Image (cartoon, rainbow, N blue to C red; front, side, top):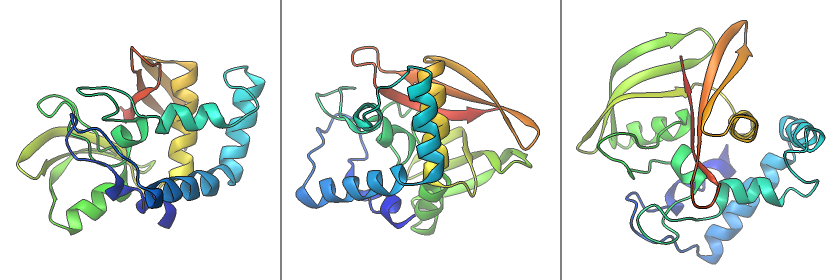
Length: 197
């Protein structure tokens, strides 16, 4: 989790600010990618995606899908990773990213996020809740609780590649879970991914 949380402060909160990676931030990203890609779950996922001819043998496409910057408001102002893991308020009045329990937990501890109650909690460690982030209310947000970064990246990548711009139905602990993924229309990179009931 350390290599994951090291990335949280590498992004601007508001879309419209071009992202610039420092040498340290590039090293942190590289460390996270190496750590995740070395896990059994990501090795299995990558092998499956290669077998299904959804990605080449090189892992570069997986990295590109999540970490290449693209335009929402300004060139290079967001990435798929930024939309899913740290907060990104690109569509502040409608949908905006916080689909990771570690990020929410850290923001809540810093008093940046204020939990206002859950909408639905499923026994498979997934929650849907209402919260405030700074001065903006998120009417409903959903994320897995207690899952590893590599599990989420594996699941979201598979769903994104198999069912882009749609819902992917999975079976987890005997329960059906749907993952919604969207592709950026200009670049075909990950725009967002999150669970729904």
